[in-house]
Structure formats: structure tokens, C-alpha cells
Length: 417
Image (cartoon, rainbow, N blue to C red; front, side, top):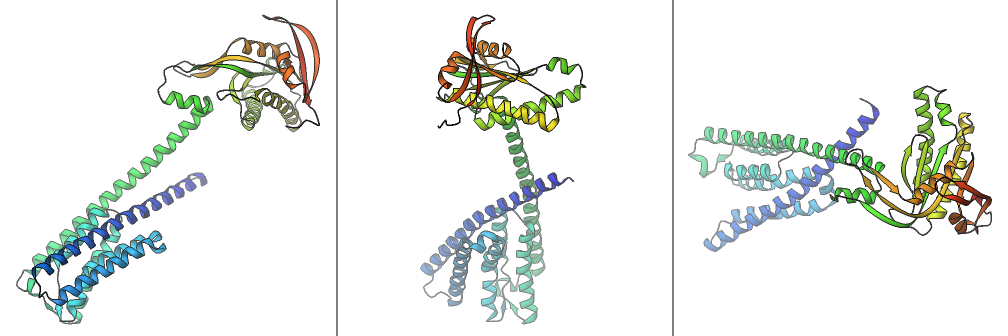
């Protein structure tokens, strides 16, 4: 077993133990309340019918109620939260052993199989977990009876003096066995269901993470709500394209695993930067990388966000070259404007952008030069006060005609935000 698997197993068992303690705590509270109410109803009934009631019987009931109140108080104390099993034994023995202790004073062995079976049945139905604890509860009652009966030479109470003790003992034995088997089977079932639910939840979270790696969170939420078509207009966003210069030639000199590893390392670096800036990576196409700012949640500073990302991508590539002794160069192009965004496909679906803004941003990259960030005049107008930009001039852009573009160099040193 690996360390990771062992750690996961330990965590799961801790979760199950916590769930079990909470389950027992809630069921114990219910059981104690039911026991007190039932004792009070019998007490009220007998007092109303028999004014000259036996004082011993009255004292037994009052003592049981007092111990049940103590159990309830301890249940709300720290010990009840951390060790509810102790409260279960106190609760069980308050009902079963207190009468025997009272009858001991008059030399009677009180084999109260009716109260015992009701108690054991109540525990098995209200608290069907930890069968060993149920067994301890039952054995404690029977051992106490035998010790008192044999040690003090007690006489049986009149209610069973003429009864078949062997039959009653066998009846009680099988009753306890059936209760414990029932609890054992329920506990095994509950244990399996708990871990099945835990596994299902983990798989659901894993699927959620995979979905969020493909789609923005708000888009994923809409798709899960069974929205048939996801398509939105955004009046103002900023789009960035980045391309690794000479990657096609490089692919002919490298083995496929080495090439994929290199590209994965670079794009993983870009992914971290995109996440840090709170932007949306749209896709990669070969060695091209596409990012958008200002959607799916509109943002007023999307141009500065995309500009900061572009500058950090340049710095990241420079650091990557130093660490890996490479000489990689990237071209980056940025443009801003309206786009249409949506999800296409029913298999291997993707969140994508369409519109002239996307095409222009792509042209800014493809018509650029290595180690430079080319931006349109729309980007320049927003950044010119707080960033250093150099005019490239008017160039011929495929499909657009002549455009004036600029090189984004850096932030101004004294810029404040």
C-alpha cells in the first residue's frame, strides 16, 4: 500500500468514526428521551390507579429517571461528544441494573426478562451500530444478575418462581443473539454504504475538477442545469494569442516524448500565470496558446489584466530558458473588442470564441516578431498612460488591410493602481 493510499484510508476511517459518533449521539438522545417519557407514563398510570403503591417500586422508577437525566446531561458534556459509547452503557444499565440493586436489599434475584428484552430491543432498533457494545451491555446485565444471585444466595422473585427458568434463559439468549446479529448486519451494511457514498463523492469531485479544467465555472454550472445551448455576447473583452517560434522545425529534431514534455512544461507555466491573474484559458492549437480576459464574468480592467499576463509570460519563458538551457522565443499578439462565446459539440465539447476580435488578435501574433508583444491601437489607447509602448507603424494585416500596431514593452516604473 502506497503512502498516499494509506493516508486516504486513514482519513476515510476518521470520517467514518466521526459519523458513527454523531449517529450514536443523536440516537442516544432520542433513546433516553423515549425511555424517560415511557417511565413517566407508567409511573403516572400506577399512581393514579394504586394510591397505596409499593414504595420500593416508586423508588426504583425515580432512581431510573434520575440516572436517565444524568445520562442526558453527560451526553451534552464533552465526554458525551467524544465517548458516546460510555453513555450508551450508562443508559442501558440504568434501566436494567437499578431494579436488581433495589431488590437486592430484600434478598430477591429479579430476573426481569421483560424489561431486559425491551431494553435490548430498543437499543438494537434505535442504535443499530457497534454490535460489540450491545454485547457488552447484555453481558453486563447477565453477569451482574449471576454474581448477585450466586454471591448473596438470593431467592427468585415471585413472578418467575414458578416459571421455567431454562425456557426463559434460552428465550433471553436467543433474543440477544438475534439482536446482535441484526446490529452486526446493519453495521456492515452501513459501513459499506458510507464508504460507497464517500467514494461516489470523491469521484464526483474529481469529475467536477476535470469539468472545470475544460470549462469556466459559471459555464459548467449552466451545462449541469441542462441548458441546451450556451452562447453569449460580450461587448468588450481582450484576447491574447501566444506562439512558440520555430516549434515546427524543433519538432523534427526531437523525439515525440521529449517534444510533448517540453510543450507541456511551457503550457503548464502559462496555465499557472493565467490562474494567478484570474483569466480564462480557451485552448491550445499545436504550439499556440489562447487566453481571454473579461469573460464569462465581465471586468472593466480586462485590458490591463491581459497586458500583465503577456509581460509575465515573456519573463516566464526567459526564466524557463535559463533553468532548462534552451533558447525558446514566443510571439504574443493582443486585441480587444466584442466576441461571441459558447460551448460547441456534444462529445469532447469546448468553450470557444468567435468574431473579428479573435481573428485580429490572432493576426497580431502571427504578424509579430519573436520576443515581442504586438498590440492593436485599441489596446494602446488604454495602456499608453501606465505602460511603455513603442509604435511599430502601419503594417499590412491579412484580411484587415493596413493597421497601426505597437510593441508592449513593460509597465511604467512609477505607475500606481
